[in-house]
Image (cartoon, rainbow, N blue to C red; front, side, top):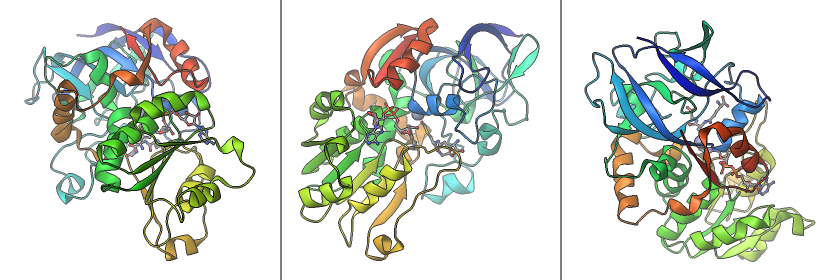
Length: 371
Ligand code: NAD
Ligand code: AHE
Ligand code: ZN
């Protein structure tokens, strides 16, 4: 039976979302309907809404950082039941595909193709408005009070965990912490640089502090971000606007030769170059986390790589969601992960466009939206 659901629909690229009542069809056998309780907006939602995402399709229900409660399950679903507390995963984990079995990546190929087209695996959508289909997004679509996701795009978590906090583990915080631990594998005493101090960069800093990095250089063009970066553990603060010369030169000088690890958490291909080139000759590694728009490419002299610098990328921090997220929720519950500091604003779901504006103006880290 179809459900009515309050949703923020992206009808067109570059336009604000519209809050409307959509129809949500029942989950198919391997799918689950989730009542989303809380969602936040990640810069990737803004990126897709802008029209720069080659995979962006409209009209769509965006949103990929949220938490909720299982409302209905398809006939073949075994790993969750009605009432379970869950976090939707844009990086699913089927546990059976070549990628899941490789032991080398968290990327899962089971539903990636249709997920990127805004469709469920059978090639259709569960959302419609006035009889016309509305696309899904990233396999999650948390900007609808009721959403339908594949069982493999869902992880059950501790019922005691506050959903209005652990929603952040659906993307931003997990991505930053994971990029340090799983992708870079930062060691004790490392000298590091973090470009971009939104939720992703701040979570990277939190991860670097946990990894006992000796120096954490926080770089942002918005000095209002220093205070939280400092709270997370940053040791040095650099505003590229204060310098005439390339920022990589400044950082190489500050560190007597460059950093052991750098992280690009913006999505700017020029900054990606700076992040690589501020790495130490012979061993420095730069991790690209930021998502760049259609047609953008990265550049550097190949000599930078010949002389030992390494360029890597990280999606969802290399975290396998169904295996690892419950443990991260427990880490939060015992105080080993700080989520509270990221939530700078609280708004009602109906004010979701204001939450995009706050992010664009650099005034918020994350706004927790309540349905
Ligand atoms: P955000 O907008 O909150 O933060 C970006 C920060 O970068 C801001 O503080 C801004 O002032 C700063 N900045 C912008 N231009 C700059 C420049 N030229 N030099 C220095 N600082 C600059 O965004 P967010 O939600 O933290 O996301 C950051 C990036 O990470 C986005 O590109 C997002 O799409 C991407 N992302 C990737 C993954 C992944 O799995 N790879 C996951 C989540 C987000
Ligand atoms: N659709 C874009 C790529 C977007 C992208 O890289 N997404 C990240 C997650 S961002 C979360 O905030 C990701 O997981 N990438 C791996 C994947 O399989 O999508 C494009 O360029 O087409
Ligand atoms: Zn995200």
